Image (cartoon, rainbow, N blue to C red; front, side, top):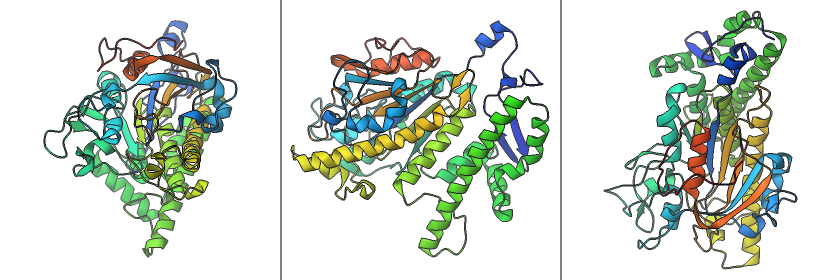
Length: 448
């Protein structure tokens, strides 16, 4: 038990213009049972998008009910099987053509979190819907430093033509604040880190960053004195939790620095850090972004996050799993078994990266459970089979218990069950209940 009680969850460590948020400590929990019940850990939501659908035979569990043998694409998640809910049969009607002809890749991401049918245009008159993460941000965003965080590995576009008459705005953004205003995602790990642990105002943040760069200091060096003062007031359990947290922060700093040093060497820049800290290796890039998503959730800096592995229709190759042809090219497999096998390898690799995220969440102890227990992580695509370009029976996985979800199962829903029904249920569990959302017909049954 900590030696101080009633510490605010908004407590930060300060030093040299830096404000560093803290994880949930026992000292932040009230003593009384009633107050403790009212101060349960918040439910966090993360929405992770992958392009080009999945090879569904290697994604879908054989049987409904309890998850036993995971199919090959989901096999990397074996350690988290009891925390997985595979949801089959969900449909994204807004992703269908509905008279607009080709453009399924653009529609699959534009409608993925909105459920809306985006207006087909490559320029003027952009129109979509409001995404589920932004519905949550509007309802509960005032409780955290950032109403939401939008992250990815490839830049958001502000124009151009990308898919059969659809603007690149649709293919590169899945978070929409209004039907005409997408939320541009951040792809630079350094920028995300500085946003999470920098000064609250932009000028102060830049000044703090410049000072750290000049003296090659870690953010932990800047707040060391404040951290030492705090530790003297905490119990052993909280000291251990704080040490684990600061160790994780420093490890991420080191990874970012090494990535920047390597990139600087490859581009002939003599020193580091450089303005852009985007790793050249895709897997490293994804894992770094996921690590910072965990820190953002752990410190309650935000409760709503989105992450795009790639933009829609990505044709990235994956030499790391011996797949040299482009992802999008392979997705048009025409039932060619070799191409389907390569698609499955890519899908499995994406699951391996998801496993890293779930490992980190499960490793954070919080209020008698883990951060994963108090989260809902949605992983999937707005396309089913990339060859068919279908938007029904989507590959949707929900990880984490979100406080009340009964996991470790495969649930199959009737044809055309709206994906947005799931979003309504997630919003309710996160404290952002809404009676109507996009084309939802009601909360999704069978989650608990």
